[in-house]
Image (cartoon, rainbow, N blue to C red; front, top):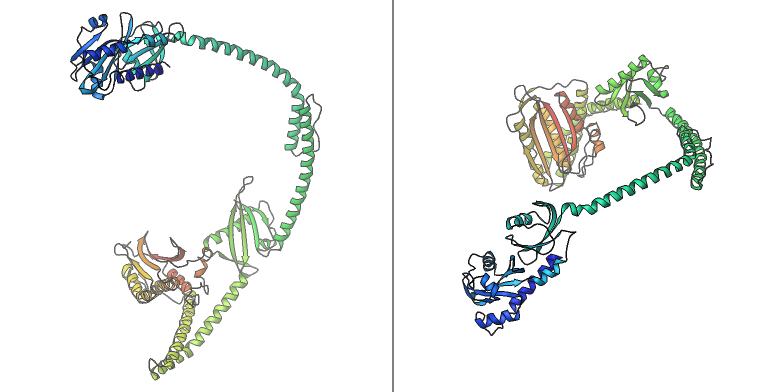
Length: 632
């Protein structure tokens, strides 16, 4: 509030300076000086000075004329220098002269002159003198240089350095004076380099707060005491029904719903709660009975369903101890396959899990009743929050499927072998027919179609025979050193023409250095050519295929990535099985033997082949073979 009052006073002084002279009058003249003093009785002294601070004219009350020695030299006055530097009015230099509160003001006027005035602040002093803080606190008006004027209060006098130190402490502060500690606040006067400071003795300021604190403490103590005895009395009356309610809750948690709680109490609300609790117990008891019946029904249904399943189902703990076995599982384990500790059963279950771990295809072979039987086995770990983990094992009998597959392969092998000789004869006659017609004749096109169909049929027969030889162990690879980079580049070059014709980009990424491995070049080239052919077949026009080779962990990794539709996640493994194929969109999908042959060839070289989703879409087919010693 004091800052705002001083702001209005300073703005009023500025307006007085602005309206001091008429626009047609000479500013710097004795007449103008006397007219200004007459219109503004608060100006006890007024002088004009040049831009260098040298006084030109001065006038005012005799006492102040003697005080300022009749002549004014402002060349070193901080307020004058501030006004010259900023071009704005400057106020400050507060002091008491002849018991009058005086403020010095410097105002720039036209013509390069400055007006210097000693202004009487008695009116402001009277207004603010009533603003007191306690018995001794009050207000202090100061400029930035520390020239201060005590407006109200009876605290000690502070010199310029002490006032500057106070102003540097921030808007709220605590200081130690010569006569004691003070707390205070400082606020700037907007638009002027002035500050209003409020000070009060610290002990006096906090005396009222201390009295209020003691009163509050006494009041809180009285409230706590009253509350304690009231709560004690209330607790005694409330204890019996609450204890009955707690006992009922314990019975419910233990599964006892028949015994109700006593509803006798002095509190109507608590009586309603006890009655509701008894009603809840009855409903929970009824619901519990219904749920138990449903659980038993579902258990019977599940046991019936599991008993009718032809697959063998086993449930064991983490040690292999049997927890459950259906009828099909008991045929495998024996008639004594009942839950409980049984070392023989535990070892038999462990042997099954070991066979599954050693099988790459998930198919295991068991000897039952003197005959070999084949099972596709899956093992899952069941984790529960309330029980120990368990092992869930399912064995599906695929003996009949294996026999049918073997019969089919033997049939295909026999047919392929018997058809090979007449097919070779037919191909010879087809070559003779090709020579009988001109290349552009219609008959020549018919012969080409017959030749292409016979070539496809011959390739199918060769693939069937190759798989049979591989499975019988009759095909042995002729291992020789092979350079991975040259091997990949040669295979890719043989396909560039058909890739360019279709509009598919073929990129080849070679290993950084020389990478060698031992392989049957012709056999392994069939693998790489099969992958490049499939990528060409499944990649649409405008797509791209990347073939790469690199050394990795003592192996040579070959990969072919395309931007086609990709392979469904559930078929990433089955595409390598015989007679499994995907539609290519080209009107021809093959016989489903290429990838099966590729897997057999890679496995003959001690390697591994697999498929995965390519980054950004498409599919990636990879295979690894051991690198040559010293070339890794």
